[in-house]
Image 1 (cartoon, rainbow, N blue to C red):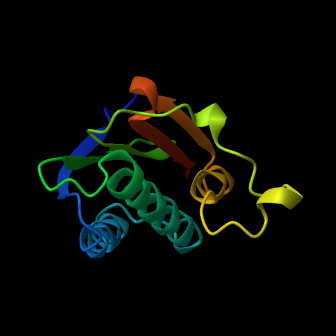
Image 2 (cartoon, rainbow, N blue to C red; image 1 turned 180 degrees about the vertical axis):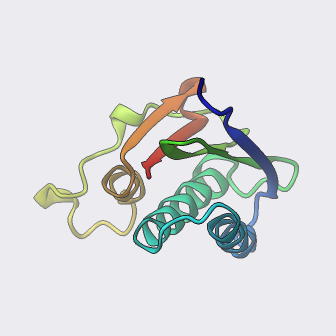
Length: 136
C-alpha cells in the first residue's frame, strides 16, 4: 500500500513581491522534504516562472485576485500546481520561442522554460492552472 501524498497549499497576492514569498516557500519545502539540490534549482525557476505568469498574464496584477500554489509530495515525485483567477488562455497558442522570428522577443519563454525544467506539465481549467511534476 502506498503512503498517502502530503499536500500543502499557499495563497499569494497578485504582485511581483509575491515572488520573494515563492522563493521562501520553495526553500522551506526543500528543507522539509529533502528535495535534492539538483532538482531544487529546476523547481525554483519553474515555480517562480509559473507564478510570475499567473500574476502578470493571468491576474493582470489585479489586487483583488489571488494566485494559489499547491505542493504535493509523494514517494515518486514532487508536484506543484499554480492557479490564477484570470480568464485563462490556450497553451497551444504560445509561439515557440526557439523559432527565428521569436528569438528576440522579450516575452514568451516562460512556458518553454517550465516544460524543459519539469518532468511533466499539464494545463487545466482553460489554462488558469498549471501542474508541474518533478520526479525524485
